[in-house]
Length: 316
Image (cartoon, rainbow, N blue to C red):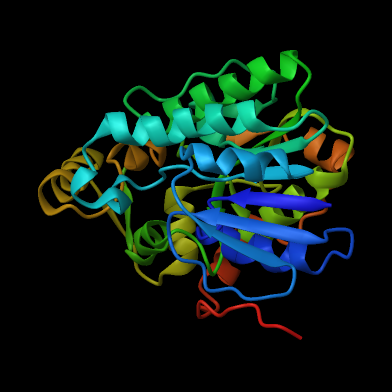
């Protein structure tokens, strides 16, 4: 099998690529990203460029399967263009549309979406639930619209799996997530505290790997088996923690993003104030996902147990 991975230089790509390289069924991995990729291995072919580049279409057409992870997650990655919503949306949506249109008949697509498409819920959300992202959360809204592009193609015969992972943590997790968890603060909210789930990056990589060869199609949720409030997460990581006014926290997040150019879209912090729990039955039954890190505490412990370097895969 020849597999193309878009967004391969991202945090999840660092975990996914070694997983796929070790599978003898995969004969070639084509890694694409606008950032440099240092990996070097006989199975790897490295391409650097924009996901919207028409020249990528011939590479897509030659792939037996595509793992689509190219997406603007943190707007500050765009540098001076971090406030340019039109640019972010063009990358997220036009890039997805171009990719889907270029797929060869019979090719399989594994599309990385997000649990944020659901918005909020205290009860476990199945994949059939309506998609209602939190107001003002551009990342989540773009994830919904990207899924709609894939869904439209599915109706025309595309074989696709849309994975919806909860907050992805682990040693290679997004730096802003690790930074938030390192701070001994939590938004002081009225009880009951909103439950949240997370999922380990290795378990997401394993689910992507399984999705390449499984018969399953459509949306599949990914999350650990239990849930904790953000306050409880912080208490598990720090000896002393402090509750802060959530309004002040949001003001600080907006100021840091808009005036200092650091941190993610402030809407990310609003997600920590809202409950969201997923039903993961399909992942267990149709992808045969068996979590290596089944509990929130397991995921948090491993996230801060070690910090790997950005080493390269090397030739044997």
